[in-house]
Image 1 (cartoon, rainbow, N blue to C red):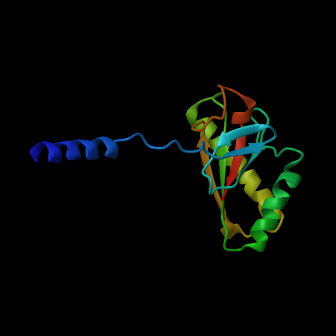
Image 2: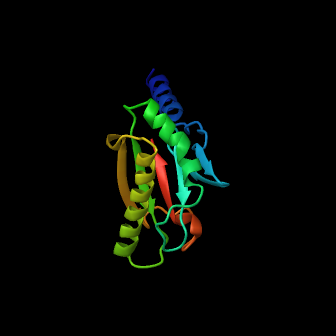
Image 3: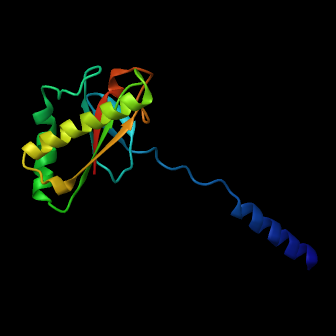
Length: 145
């Protein structure tokens, strides 16, 4: 009887420690051919900037129009606008550059009729690069919901 209980306990331990089942890879967001893993509950979009520049790209109204329309139709929704920079320059400079880029995108959304209470602006500086050092895709603003 003792051997039977020991065998059952060992069997329970073995089956309880089995490897977890594999999960699906994280969802990705694609913008202009670039993709990055995201939380499946977030919608993201990128606005890319020129080197050492805070001027909005020429296509920014086209990029932001669907976001503005959705935010205006859903006044209880908020958008997080995160500004980023590549690693060129020092940490503080890149933080401020990211903040200026995020503020420029926020101002463009407000100009399209979005209420200021729906916009949260932040800077990550160089903290979340998409690609290799000094890559142009690191000079961006991320809109996340």
